[in-house]
Amino acid sequence: MAVFLSTFLPDSDASSKLQVVDEGLGKLSSEEESSPYKLIGDRDIKAILKPRRPFSHKGTYGHALIIAGDMKTMGAALLCASGCLHAGAGLTTATVPESGLTALNSALPEVMYLDRKHLVKIKSLKKYDAIAVGPGLGKQLEAVCILEELMVLKQAVIADADALNILSKREDLLFHLAKDSIFTPHLKEFDALFGKHKNWWERLQTGRTMAKKLGSVIVLKNQYTFIIDQQGDVLINPTGNPAMAQGGMGDVLTGMIAAYVAQGYSAKAAAILGCYFHGKAGDELAMGHYNITASQLAAQVPVTVKAFQNKSGS
Image (cartoon, rainbow, N blue to C red; front, side, top):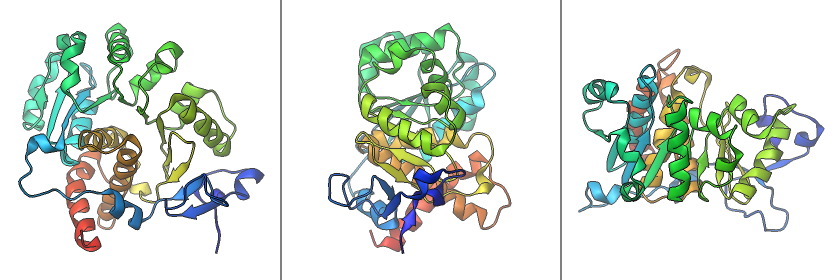
């Protein structure tokens, strides 16, 4: 029985109701009769996810840098770093205001600290395998300068929250970030970046166009999150539930995606794994919780991934 795109949209128009969704990522958009809309399945995750190998060490799983937080928004930085830590990055470093250092050391002693002053030393940032920027960062001059420096670095980034807000007003930055960057907007952030839209069908068409134009991945967040890859294919994430509708979830997701990039996954694969296990961890918690906090979800992620591996026989 055919599955139609409108099933995954909170609103729709006639065009979306005619679009068939392929189940699984096996077909490529270039194949005859293949749909650009694809539903992610367990088999796809099993094919992407790599087991942690004997004799590996912290260096094996990459070093992620989290650029986040302001004096009054340290929570976002902590949640993002927690998502990165629990999704398995070998090393996680957070660059936060110095006033937040005590909170960082208390909440996440495994996460290292980088003084914001070092962000102007572009060469020193090349050692990081993944860079996430934006959660709780603010929109002041310092935050704008950070994005300008990252553009010069020519390294792909995971951009969320305030980074997206800044980019929506600075097209010169948006279109000059490195290819294979990952943008993680919710509805309002997406419309701020790319213009107002009447419905989700229109957003998906814009997303497909812009992902190809930017050469990057767009993660459009909703009940069913849409991962739009560099070729304009729309990969529909089936996990997640209303119990997750609380603040901080996006911060955790950004950190998770950064962790997967740091571990050597491609931008597309990292976005798929991050969204899938973020939602699946929420689904497992929702079986015993009416609502879920972002902190609970981050801690659940390694449990969820291990259970998936055991079930799939990896």
